[in-house]
Image (cartoon, rainbow, N blue to C red):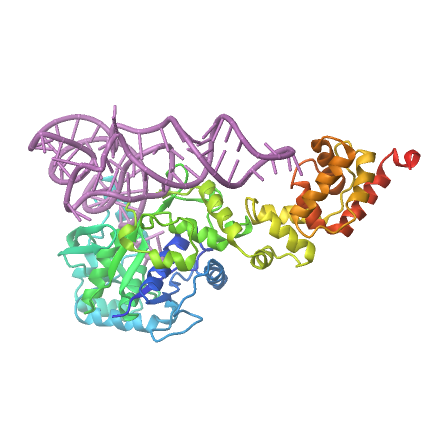
Length: 467
RNA sequence: GACCCCGUCGUCUAGUCUGGCCAAGGACGCGACCCUUUCAAGGUCGAGAUCGCGGGUUCGAAUCCCGCCGGGGUCACCA
């Protein structure tokens, strides 16, 4: 049987880092087993679901490098892949359960339910639905329905033991009698999550559900629904959640929590993916931790997924990002940076990518290099600049060559290297710190270097009298 | 409150099933030194974990058993 896994986001916001990792694990698993990666949009919440969020999520997944084999835009045998387009199927299934006595209409109002819930909780009881509508005579039910009374449909939860053989958590047991008769079809005719997800996983032929830990307690409900419908539920693998630095659930106050924010902060997709993959999963012993997506998918296995939650560590992410920055080609970085490819920017990226902390830092340095220094900084030395203008007449083809030119200049002037470098950096970039001067010469090129030296010399107060 | 999950260096983790190879290994971060033309990067070395706590089993426990504590999740006509 071919492996079929799915990622099922609800379009109620942009792609969160935790969901991104869930998507990644699913994708890695699918690639590893030559299976299919399915994207399903869970948009049954009419209030909160927005098409623009769906578009955003799709874009973020693509940016991360995760492509799906079946999905709302890609099509596939098991479509449609948007739950809002599968409503008739859910209703038909609910009708079947109703006919078979495995579900019943509930006329309780949300307000009454809420009051009931609060009271039970206050008295220290589990807040479970008391099943009062289950006992309603069928004549009364049809009468009230004909009269147009709003009714949700509840699932008759069998009291039996339900065993989840989880690929990460192991054998987890639940008692149906601890669970209540949850709503499967809302009064507005839309299905609830536990019903729609359970049904779609079966109907779409999903063989394994890899998702966040927070769904473990929902699993017995979904398995019961699947079985009531006459299907064998898929297998499950619940991966632990990602927490913030303080150990609590990840939220906005922890900083960047969405994929879009990290992209904006200059994180490379392969850097994020690599870091996220290692949050909760550990590669086989002896494997280099720095890996691209194909390598990751070659090694990925659920038996090496951790059972405990992991804290998000921005420093570690930054390190992985740097590793990938060094490995990336100049072309790719130029593209990711969105800068114009000129000989100067290409040389700048080539040099900068070696030790920049991230794309944002590269972008900043590139634009700083491209801009003409307003005025020289750090006590420019007239003699040094004039000598430099002469000595640097040649076009350095490499950084090493630029270095030799500088050494030569140093010998001619008989000045300490430090002083020469400082003067040149100040004159050429208008800054006191930054790249090695040899690198600056290489990046700027002979012509631009001379131009800037001219300007610096011209701006020197001493220039008039001395020249 | 009920049910369920989790607990190894500051952080991510290996090791737990199949007790001894673990006086606990790797990575990030941190410290020192080296390199050096500034800031970094890089290299080398180093500090850092009584394996949540308490019992028990055993010649021997991070690993098995019991109890406790702490953190988290679910219990919505959200997903």
